[in-house]
Length: 207
Image (cartoon, rainbow, N blue to C red; front, side, top):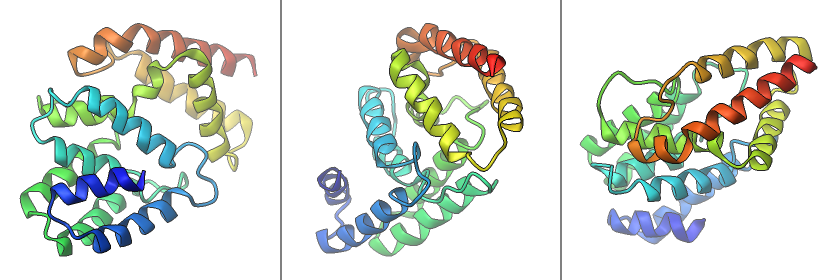
């Protein structure tokens, strides 16, 4: 993953030493205790899916930066993770010479992951959101591992309260039609999303 980060930063004209320092901070944040899902494995998976949607994006570099930073601040007890992650990205990237216009786009993309909804036909936002939630259309075994990891991150929440909250989230997602924003992800994943969410809802109801 470090080499992947360095390829991106070299394209931005950032010196390797400076980029490596940022990498250390990214790795430390995503490797913190309690990160069972929102870790570097999630970042890698999201980047891989985004790569498949590269031709859809307008500013794919900004999309990649946003993916790297969108969960850098993550505490399930907080409601400002996205805003704090966006602020962190700006603080780190501006001194490295990343243009303000790109920083504004990165901020927009990170903030969009708070609700995973958008009424704006912004292709970069579409790619960001579809890649971030691509796990919802993963094969059932992989999806179930994701759902278990999310439960572990919310281990401080009692089972009954977690069931109520998680059910509300899943039902809201299930009501979206189509679920994904890009045509590619709609074709690849909408049916699988419905199957995965329905299965988890059934499991939650049985607990």
